[in-house]
Amino acid sequence: MKKKIIYTLLLVLALFLIYAAYVISNPVSPLDTASYTEDDKEILITYSRPFKKGRLIFGNESESALVPFGKYWRTGANRHTMITTSSDLKFADNLLNAGEYSLYTVPGESTWDITFNSTNAFFGITQPDPEMDLFTISVPSNMLEDSIEQFTIDFIPSPPGGPSSTAIRLRWDLTEIVIPFN
Image (cartoon, rainbow, N blue to C red; front, top):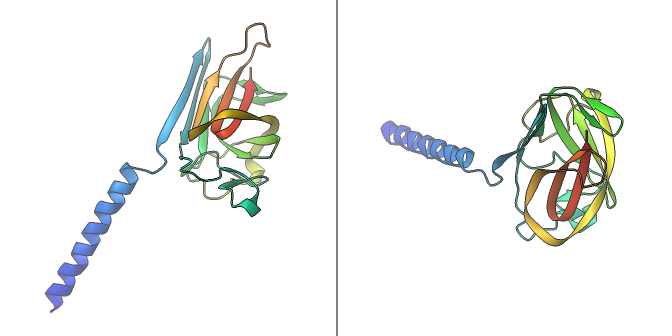
């Protein structure tokens, strides 16, 4: 009888380990990177890319939005969104020194707060320690005509004839956020 219990427990443990390995190697929100290289700037953003799956993404908490307005969002899924830069970057009037940082957001209806934090912890379930925040900037939120199914971060160059800055772009569902930097 003891052998049956031990074999059953070992089988359950083995099945659990196989399932855990599968979940880790096939996440629902896959890990991705966005990279930018120009002149002396090398920037890498590592983030997880959740899918819309018919859900309300950005909106009021009362509407059961996945990412409610006015609340901390790790800017992706699973882990914190991390930005690594080989050179100093200027966001508005704030300097981000070369290094690795977490980036999180507080979405709003018309503007978003983007915070750069010196924490480089990888799990984003809780908001990073505000004492470690380097600075926060506010940027306008833009509406898209076509829905973006999977959360996407990329880089866009400065417009021809416009200011000489590039931007980090966040897009998901019908929302676009552009974060210019020099």
